Length: 69
Image (cartoon, rainbow, N blue to C red; front, top):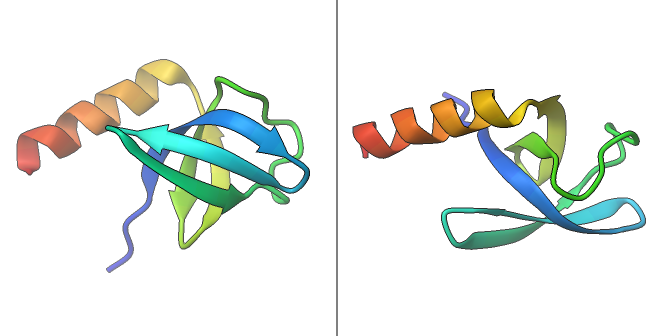
């Protein structure tokens, strides 16, 4: 089973971004999504941003994950 989570972009440095969710901060590769900018939400899987999503969808997904946890 694979798990990908929404994370908000805090900083961008070339092909990498610092992303955050729930106080967890990570560095991820954003080469597949050259259009992303600071403040965007992306789906992160295995260290790569694989999809850009809107803030409402990201917040709904994170809320559901909190309810399960």
